[in-house]
Image (cartoon, rainbow, N blue to C red):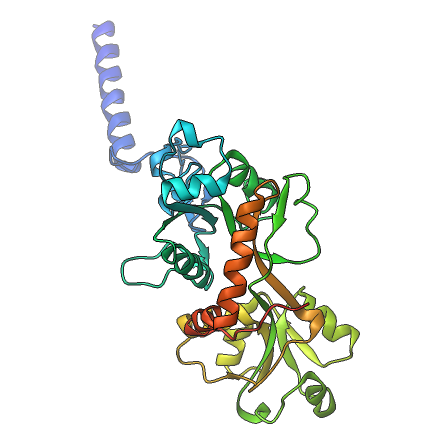
Length: 339
């Protein structure tokens, strides 16, 4: 009798315990994972995520860089018998010249969709190729950073140094070119120059030079940590800085400032992304010599015939005005190479 009562009491207590647990605990859907303390993970999308994010599995064909155009191999194959000949012989035999370029360096080069402009340096290359009934092809290279997989040193290792292309586009002769000799590379003759140019609007329209801004004590917007900002500091020009050219442009659009010095290549980008902008380059403005850099292509030192060919092509196109027409078609001011 006592044993029976004991078993009955155990059974009743079990039922009460189960009922209590079911009534006080949340029911978690099977599709969700319960965690005592949620973990915030900040990924590439810069948004917080709750819970565990599994590490990515590298899939070369779905790699974002690969999909955007960066590929560590020549776009088309080269016959074995032409792999060890000089570049000019290979170009003539194949009827094709191969260049390495950054996939997003507007207005100089970019991976373009159908019916979109390719970039002014791609068009210059196309113009040269067409004169000889050649084709051209592009090996896209990440030229964004100075070291590692980026440029110029790292980019050369992944492109022209392993025979991926004949020339590299999109370079400026900055004077800090210590990576050239170790890679046995040389600059072509320059085909144009770029520099910081003055843009004005509204109350600053009468300002034509930096000296005018200094006399009238008008603050001039400039990219932070740029050579232009350093130049303004040394020459006591009133200025204010913004992080990168596009923020200077945004400040002009918002009328936070009415005068600015921006890189001449950014003018084209501004017209593309900020069509509402009303500022204009000061008519006839010429960048100060210290804020001007020549643009050139990079070629292997041993490719003497190709170097001569590119230099002669540039000289001809500068004389006929072809390069100027291409550059200005992109809404960018053309400045000839400096001495």
